[in-house]
Length: 531
Image 1 (spheres, rainbow, N blue to C red):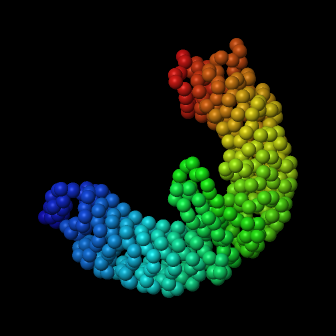
Image 2 (cartoon, rainbow, N blue to C red):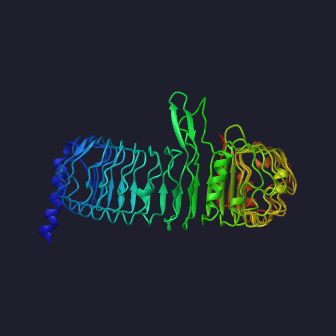
Image 3 (cartoon, one colour):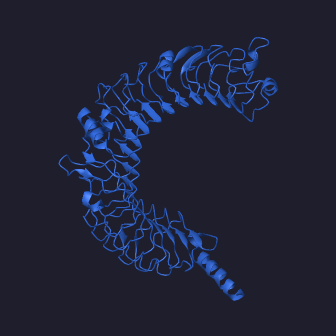
């Protein structure tokens, strides 16, 4: 036994000495880290008992039949961020234990047929960010245990019909940001256990066949978007094409449609962002009406000049619980527009660029008796009383986010008193200068209140005393210098017996610890703390 251990140690030392110019690190005796060592070729002297090998961020350009010949216990191989443009057809033939292979961010233009056929235990294959254009029908031959396949950010235009026929256990496939001209209906047909399909930012043509996903009975998430083509690098102008129509079935629980376009540069002078016409939106909603989805994301509906109160009528009878919409071009929403979605528990309405939500009708959230989360941040709302009236009948509402709007002046008395169920209110990033003594009455369940980054100058005596359950209070980024500048006897923190977290600009420690003994976390920002 001692001889065996000595041999093991000598093998490790031998490997380290052989790579003394660009030495790799060995962890736990079987994990080898050769990250960013300047290798131009795959070293050929790795110990045969290695289980993990990281060769990422080197200068390797190709692999041959002898590259990994002795590593029959290897389980993870990372070759990402190299310059690999050629992989010999037998490079991986002696890796029977390999489970994860990462080849992302290389220069691969094709995958030889049956390249991975000897990797009988492979569960994850990552080929993202290469230059793949076309794949062979046998590119993934023999990968019966593969669970995840990542082909995103390549140049793939079409997929052979039988390319995935051996991937009987595949549950995740990522084809995003390629150049697919049509939804690969036949290629995906064998993947009946699929749970996650990402195919956003491809260039589907109008004449493609109907997208039919009804046989994906275990589908959990489908990510789609319209095609966006960058036609001018200098101006970053974007041209868009309509989304293909589709029918949706199975037991999917999450759907993301028309995902927001990711802008990589600031100061874009001209752009035509992702669009969905009223007709396209109607078709999308019509196709979803018999689905079992729980979450729906509709992004950049910027041709919807007016949202009617029956816009979501096609979804009547669905079980959608979470709705996120990004509308650009609509300044108000009609009364009862969401009444067709009685199961909704979370609603996010956000606007971007120049057109934002300016006002809310009193009955805009009519029928949302189960709503728990309402996110209205990053809009142009300016009348807090109007907002308060619009949510007055949301008796289950717990989380209200109104950050980054245009509220100003003094927070009025008894605001949100009609919604005693509230647990968290976010009013940060507005322009309030003051708080009324009775602003926060009748909120016995409120735990978190965020008033940061306003212009509040003064806090009345016991202004938060009605918030008997409050645990977190954020006041930083205001014009309050010290709490002890208030008139003699005033104590704005009076009554906060459960407060545990406080964030302010300046604070007098003696005042703090005398009146808030429950405090556990204190964040004080500013050039100095005055004693």
